Image 1 (cartoon, rainbow, N blue to C red):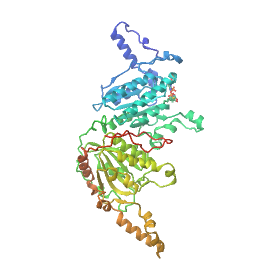
Image 2: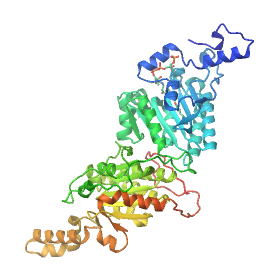
Image 3: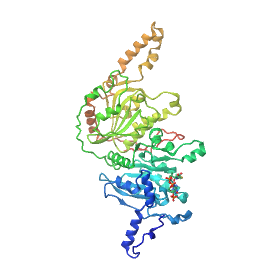
Image 4: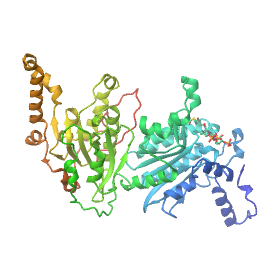
Length: 540
Ligand code: HXC
């Protein structure tokens, strides 16, 4: 075991440059050869390798590499490592400045100490003051047990800064190993959480505690692996197969975002013509008006080639939220996915959509909404679990969003889904519809007994009467023209022209200015006794 700088022999104590070389060498050794080998055996990179992979070559400026704890209890005096289990500093990604910290599992299991917090706080503060993103690479056994309440207080310092920075600079958490106990709340307070398959786990309590408290027997992966948080809990937004993929994803995400809310997102050169039209869009919606189709494919066709990046892809797949580019400019996309549960809105998709709309608003990214939704999901389970409150989040988020908003109704926009998903009343700036749009209060099967119940009951052939009504209703209301008549839809467009129409509207809205009522903050619809992910947005 390494015990301190005094072990690096052969260099003069009197020569400042020797002393410097010694200190630097020592600070680069992490937890030593054996632990680095163990880290590699698990398929994980070390903290320094991760930073080198993430940042532009040669751009890393380390801060605090010599800081170490002063704890003497529990034999800690012999376990002093310069840097204290976290590597922190600033650097560049694609030439843009970022702050970064990477927990070093090879040093005391990356356990979180007072000194770790001070180092992380330092880069958080510098990032907020300078308006640059913070990226946290998590790989830690949680609060350093030997430091007692000091390490708990230290977490509080990180959380407070996460909240302060929320809605000002992008914050990205990458889980690349254990992230246990209170440590999980920092990722939950940041904008994006990426998990690495197989090696990462986010758990409030480990399997042992779960077994003793609830009697449930689960493995760490079953309890908090990337699969759980991407598909079930929704706590993670992305998963990757390796550390390297995760770090490449961070670079990609940042490409869609400004460095802070006072700046614009980067505009990339695009060789995809703005007026590219695609005939396949004209037949994207099945002619029977009912069958499923892939909204994802529609989006891939409309936006710049290969620019679609789905967030929360595996959580609530009846909705799509994604970044994309149009003419090289970043946009946020919200869409229903008719190929999964008919694109219905439910509790989880309401969470997913509302959080994303707020995220786009925070960073002033235009929100383009594609609507094909039969409405909110009916049923006892949804009602008991608060679909009303969760559904209200979508309405709240759209109404609050002052970024440019454009909606395109591709097919169903029935009842609440029409109003909630980017209607004129939610502040949509431009509303478009395809000729296949069906904008109505409710479906014909539900409307028949409500509106024509008596006639149906009194008819000699009740089925024929019901069918006659359904056909009449469908013809009269299941189209975009009633909505266009009264100005709810600005224009019914040919689907193949959607890309150009959106480009025109986005160009118009680039200089959109909205005046807002000053207030401290509103009350986003949440309930105290059910967990929810912190959403953030800012009035601009
Ligand atoms: C101090 C720790 C530590 C910790 C690990 N280590 N976690 N030291 N405090 N929290 C040390 C180990 O003693 C060991 O040191 C080295 O790191 C590597 O750990 P191993 O257990 O050998 O590694 P591994 O087998 O890979 O297991 C990793 C692990 C396990 C699954 C993360 O270490 C573990 O379960 N740790 C505790 C996780 C946990 O319950 N955290 C919650 C803490 S409470 P040596 O020198 O022996 O090699 C908390 C509340 C905060 O965080 C609330 C804030 C609001």
